[in-house]
Length: 104
Image 1 (cartoon, one colour):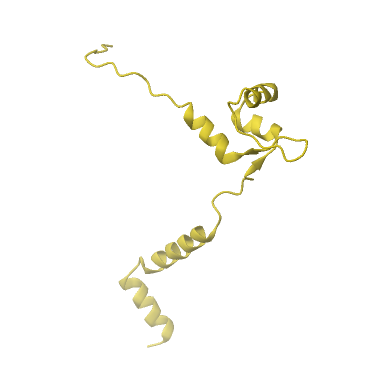
Image 2: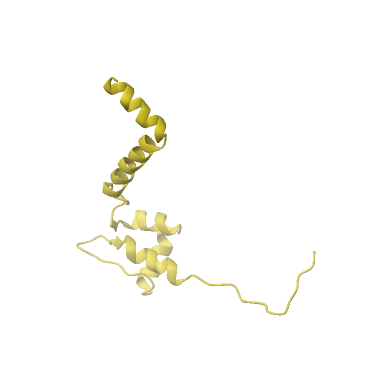
């Protein structure tokens, strides 16, 4: 029996073997790929876009102490992780209405 025939027989015995190998290769590639290519430090424009607010609102929130910021020189800088924490801190859960049934 030739080598290629032997390989074909092995593949027929386990049709998922090649798929399993390909999946393992893809998993290794995904694991080695950075998950977030976004910059950690944001300018005021980028931070306002990230928070979906106007730049003037961003400045008000920094001056009121609502948003953490850094000022290396003349321009404000914001850490993306701290802005994410700010967004999370505003998360609210709806009140629970126990005993109330809504009929449609």
